Image (cartoon, rainbow, N blue to C red; front, side, top):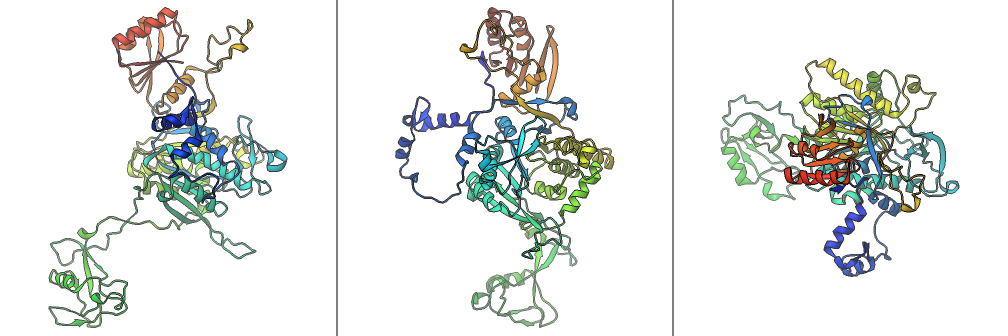
Amino acid sequence: MQKLKLGSKDLAKENIQKLSTIFPNVVKEGKVDFELLKQILSDYLIDGCKERYGLNWVGKKESILKANTSLNKTLRPVVEKSVDFENTKNLYIEGDNFEALKIIQESYLNSIKMIYIDPPYNTGKDFIYKDNFTKNKAEYEEEIEAIDEQGVKLYKNTDSNGRFHSDWLSMMYERLLIARDLLKEDGVIFISIDDNEVHNLRHICDEIFGEGNFVAQFVWRKRTGANDAKKFVSNDHEYILCYSKQDSFSLRGIEKDFSNYKNPDNDPRGEWAVDNLTCNKTASERPNLFYDIVDPKTGIVYKCNPNRVWAYEKSRMNQLISEGKIIFPKNPNGTPMYKRHKSEVKSSFKPISSLLGDFLNANSTKQLRNIIGGQYFDHPKSIDLIKILLKQSTSKSDIILDFFSGSATTAHAVMELNAEDGGDRQFIMVQIPEIIDEKSEAYKAGYKTICDIGRERIIRAAEKLRMENEELRIDMGFRYFRIDTSNFKESKDISEIDQNNLFEDVDNIKPDRNELDLLFEVILNLGLKLTLNIKTKEILNKKVYFVENNLLIACFDSNVDENLAKELAKFKPQKIVLKDNSFKTDNDKINFEETLKELSPESDIWVV
């Protein structure tokens, strides 16, 4: 019977284990001999004391360490804030996004097709989420009176901070390190950013995702008529950086318009359109493409333009003329054209090059105001902008993650696109519960945190979609989770145990936690997804949870014996989880395990 390990994955330990299989001589007592490793890789590894190209800042190593360190936290389900909890495949996670990424890391490893984030732009007015920065307050940071719902203080990264750029880079770096692991092999990430940090963001993304996996830096217009009074430069655009996990990824492209393809002459080859017969080369550059052509029906000679020669060599041109692929004008001074048939078009899509268009902040604010009834959120992103990104990168059954969720535009866009094409894309939204200013209109309207606004937006957007189409059958619910400490008490060191607290840890579950809390922590620590179907049954007066039929069976009741093992074995579960102190006696624990081994030998048994 195995003891279930709690907390997020210890990546450093896992990487050391991988290293030991390749170079067993460099790992001794669980520690890496880096000097020996350098010597072994001396032909490839640049010596650490030499200068090399790259972006470094104060706190970078700490970010890497933090991303690799295990986190003893979990997600607690909040059923009363959820919508269609039993059936939905969507998630809304309330809490710090770094912690959320760590918690779901194993369950959603290589599972996310698209990540979109709109992080703080580091303008000097942004909140930097809570972090383990160990800098001197007087020298490095300005603490402000802002807290999240759990009372954890947030920090404002002002340009008077001695580590203004470093703090922002550290915050982004550690989150993107984990985010990359969540992407599928053909996954992609889109990051909204402006001029303040776009250059630094390119550097860290090149490092994390690889320079070869840079796809594009899109430009889109956010407003009109803006200008800097000092320099008279219009600041009306922002960027979206796009990186893939592997260089084999490509965007879908923009669908071509075939409305001009007709067949007025009943050509047996099908519909066709007129296309250019010349290319952008001169006679001196391509002399083999500089020649006269003759209409065989009229004998009219058409001269070649020396500044823009024909697209085909003479022999190929003669063949096209004989095939009726060249359209000759009646005017001798006109230019022959190419008859391109629809069947010749290699792709129905053309490359996407720019996102400049009607994605203005004013329109996005109006969209949100119309949904939630007031202007309660500053600078939301455009639904249409996010939908373009979804169309370019996802299929109908993909998972989309946004861990700077804000007003939940991404969730709204996912639901709208599913309504349009019948898809069942799933969303995961993550947002820290930053408390709203009591003087604001949002607070007066009843919204206490940013999460309240995002949650309400999803609910109201779903209602609007149903009103527009009563027969709509797409998933518009979500399971709501809140980040919290583990549901299980930490084991005391033997030196801390005395007569007064001897029996405190007989039950290792915290008193304010319920069975659903325990079940989801088990699901996470087994690396299972949070949206699996859950059913309950009463068996021998015990409450038993069935996750995705027989994928996982869990029971947290007490006084368990081998009779329950006999009943559970009938379902041939892949995994069984019970509390370590669930059994009546030690003999019952042994008998339970032996009975299951005999009746359902494929079942893995775990205790917490």
